[in-house]
Amino acid sequence: GAGVSQSPSNKVTEKGKDVELRCDPISGHTALYWYRQRLGQGLEFLIYFQGNSAPDKSGLPSDRFSAERTGESVSTLTIQRTQQEDSAVYLCASSSRTGSMKTQYFGPGTRLLVL
Amino acid sequence: GENVEQHPSTLSVQEGDSAVIKCTYSDSASNYFPWYKQELGKGPQLIIDIRSNVGEKKDQRIAVTLNKTAKHFSLHITETQPEDSAVYFCAASINTDKLIFGTGTRLQVFP
Image (cartoon, rainbow over the protein chains, first blue to last red):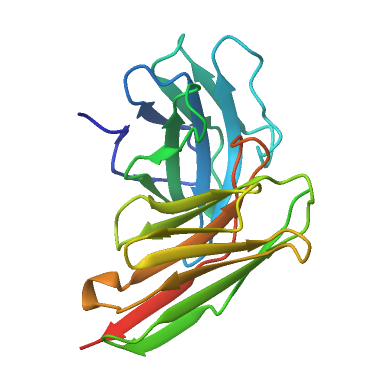
């Protein structure tokens, strides 16, 4: 079946501009996560949505970062007034809340370059 | 909060040899430990995971061991093949919620 999809796959923007990154989770997955991966580094947790519960925003690095999710489907990560240090790959993952393991399945990521 | 350390950062082995990657975690409440493989330009893919009520799990050439007392867990790949070359990440979480990742190990398998 279809996996997690993300768009755009690549985004180049100028410092100070706003960007929106989109994630389409696996159908039926109620949990959705955003992570950031800087070049050559591990993944950093940003935000987590689970059904209708309030999202866990504990990983967002500043108030320039925000995310929304429509029901149990699409999510959008917005970065306002982008800075060069925001350049990274932004990865989305989704998981089912049934079953014992609740594996997180990752999309291919959006590569963001801020000039 | 949780902190995960991963070693080594790079690992080179000859095809057919074994590879071992080690991770330590800090939060004793963590109870879920997945390992992900990431190939160039792709998102991470789960290769094996383990819960804290189990000490070892195997899947063909891949095994994971967990020492809860020492807060260590390790990935073992036997009979390595060139297609095993990738970056491997360990992670820890509480109840499979947000994952805290290690910094990654770049594995190169030479034919």
